[in-house]
Image (cartoon, rainbow, N blue to C red; front, top):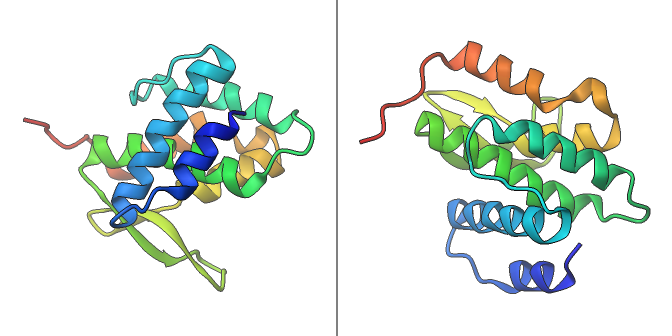
Length: 146
């Protein structure tokens, strides 16, 4: 994993949560290309590529889970946010005690960073394809983008 990318992201003074999530998501695209020779393009089809990357990350000794969750979780969240015209907010994860970034779509709160955390720490039963299928079932048709 590129230390330069991490230093750049962690030292950027993002003006708000949405800008930070977008910045990290773009960083994920860069990391996928440079570190894994894989392409992420913010389409639902790229979720399978993201899942493949998370398998590789989980097999890397001494990876920094917090950073990896921010990087890849923001990418997953941006796919959902863009597709459904949602917004980022800090909110408490159900059963948790701290606020985490969530995507709000018409009152539904989704926790893509927590999903990536579970994928990295629990394994393949937490696959992203199933998560995204649940999201699309729950949210219905995507927003019309003009």
